[in-house]
Length: 335
Image (cartoon, rainbow, N blue to C red; front, side):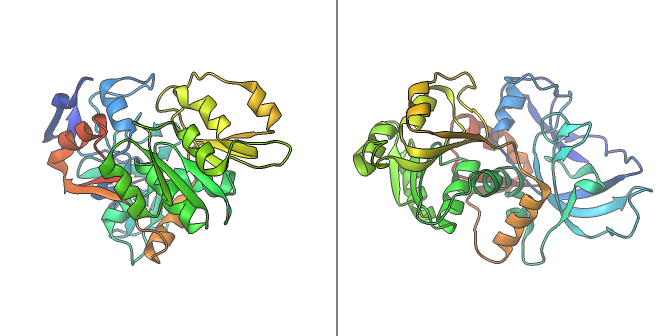
């Protein structure tokens, strides 16, 4: 098969479009022909080896995959799946880890996946949109709905709103009936956030998001239970953590599913106890979240934000855009 491969860590110049051995099926596996694969924020980290994850070499990137079954392992041929079925892949595999991180990804023509990691793609959902959903939209759905319980009428501040998870959070918050304040750092991205439905935008390259919240909603006041926002979405971490707490109203919730700017943060416990804040973690997503997101897109409740749809040979260009933060939403590649 053809695949986008890197044999050593480094920049995008390490990526090569080449012949690569077809996957070898185990009895419980299925072989899926990749019809579309989407990139995520972890692609540059895996390529450049900025994490401690045990990434095998040579490596194929790409964690979000949609395609068609072309072969069933001997133990996977139990009637649940058939050759030709349209499937989305749940990329976290027991004993192997995350597809595209610790096991070979989907920037190729064929992938091996245990049958238990397959999910049916609705008839009304095309492969491009199906591939854009698993990691970013699944994570956002679990964080905002299952964990955060975001509700109609609440105010939600979303930091880093222009990436895959961020754009998903904007769309889900609006669907849930919340008022959305979305943060970004480029005029063209802020305009796209407005198009997605953000009620207010904050250019964090020019403006302090905490001050912007206080100016619009007031400084939090414990006695009167006023000021601040109900929810802060903060998967950035780093030096945004304390100001995220300071932007919350009394009893507010800070939701996090990651720490793209650093997991070691400062803290100010005075705000946490004084304003009785709730700090809530959300770890990834579940297959049922992925199924729900596909249903939401298939019936028109959500339309995934797509930055670009390109041939697989343009993977290096697309990962370089991630490195340079020139992406809004999801990039999907077609083998």
